[in-house]
Length: 197
Image (cartoon, rainbow, N blue to C red):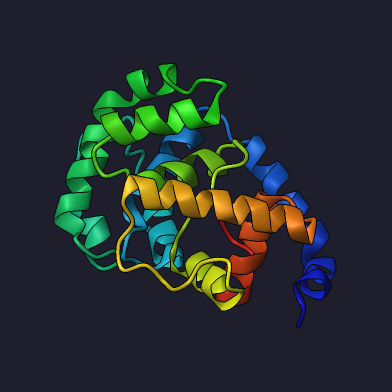
């Protein structure tokens, strides 16, 4: 199926999902951060289940190590439990640094939040309503490689390479006349079968 046809089928659902992200407030911002800290090399749906369990057990205001919850749901559960505990401790400062400028905010997050690289920081910001940041996971990179936007799937992404591919993704989105944030969700759903987050 061509991109325009696939987009026409899912446009309404995609736009609704992006609007949902803009409504994320309060404690939910913290739990979106937890989700994005858990997702590297793990399944999004399992990470989401882990976050729902953390919410149920009021992780943000309770004193417990989340390792047991993460153990069956995400890879590197010990390391990631450490990231979550650190993020909880630093969350006041993190919230203070959620500035209007998406790129400036992403830079700050990458430098100051343990466990967040460019992809995870962009994912977190998109999930709380920011726009125009590429979430270069394997689904997106595969789609970009298939469409010759990039030569091949990169094995690793340096900052320079990440920003370069992000720029190419933006240019491609302009060419097909679909906003990059919407195209991201479309590509992700093409790879996974669902529009998620």
